[in-house]
Length: 191
Image (cartoon, rainbow, N blue to C red; front, side):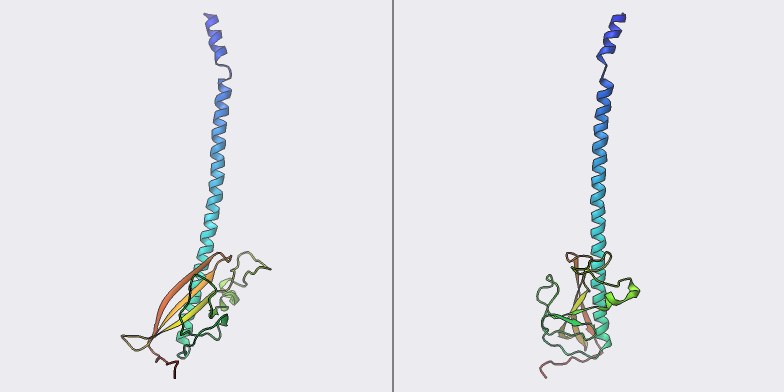
């Protein structure tokens, strides 16, 4: 009887070691997958934050363009050219925006007050030589197209396209609105 107990005890030797090693492998695989998942979630959160920054910059430029349209005299629409126009001058284009997906646009107005205003916490922009964390890649811009007189009530209809960058050149948001100004008379650019 003691011989049988001894043989059964000898047959179980090493079983605890093998079980412990298998559990250690399972726990290690779970820990590695958690660390990998954490890294992916961190990148997703960073990309979402950068996307929101770009959308907010584009909406700020759009709202500034609407403010500019209502605070100035009725602007005369002209054919817009290549390059940036300062936001202190502004312009309304008679030609439509070519491809809104390719920024910056030809004849866009740079909303430089966005990055010069210390009140909104944005004090500079990033460029290739001096990248700064927490900044925008480039000031946002807008493009105003005169769509002509309104059909129903007197006034002029404008299309405002605006874009904004996040922290990199790869993060761009484009927004668009149609804006009606009823207290101005449309000017004919041919006169």
